[in-house]
Length: 246
Image (cartoon, rainbow, N blue to C red; front, top):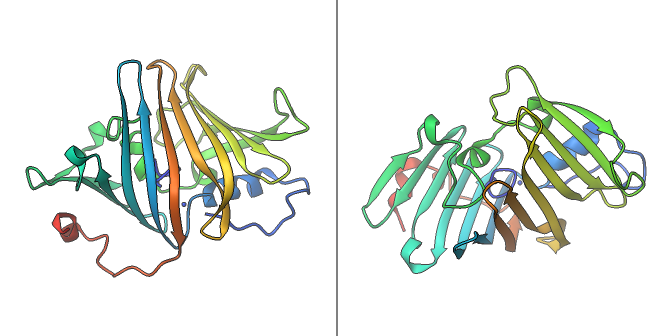
C-alpha cells in the first residue's frame, strides 16, 4: 500500500501548468509525489469486500519520507492496537493480544496485508516509478483527448511480479484515474481506481482509492478521513522499540 498508505503509503508539487503538454517524466514525478511528503499523519478507513464477507478497518498512519511508515489499527475491537512498522524495505507487525513483534520475511512479501487486496510488498516499495520502470507515453486507448496514458515495463534490476503497468491521468488537472497491473503474459490482474478528488490538508488529492483483484473477485477501498502534511514527529516514532508502546 506504499503507493496507497501506505500503504505507503505520499504528496504533491508541480512546477508546470496542468493545461500544458506534460512529459512522461513530469507525470511520473506527479504520481510518485501524490501520497508522499517529508512527513504526514492521516486517519484512513479501509473497506475490504469479498464474495463471502466484508470488513471495515479504521487506522492511523504516520509516514516520514519514503523510508518510514507506521500504521496503527483503531477498529474493529478485535484488531485494535495491531501495528505495522515499515523501515526501508523491512517490515514488522505487532500483535498486542500475544504481545509479540514478528518480522515479515521476504517469502511473505506478496501476501495480503490485513486480508486486503494490497500486499506487504505494496507497503515497502521505496523506489520511484522512474527508478523501477521503463516508461512510454502513449495515446489513451479510449479517450486520448481527456487522459494521458503511460505504459511501464520493469527494468532488469527491478524485483517485481508485475510484467507491465499502465497509468491513466486526467489532462485537465493531472489527477490519476486508474493504474492497471499485468502479469508477465500481459494479462490484467489488478486495477486501482482513484476518485473523490478534493482539497484535504491544504492540497488536492484523490481521497478514495479502490484496488480490485480480478481473479479473487475482491476489492479494497481506502478512504482518507483526514490528513496533515509535514507535522513534526519525535525522533524515535519509527523505532523498533516503540512498537509495543500505546
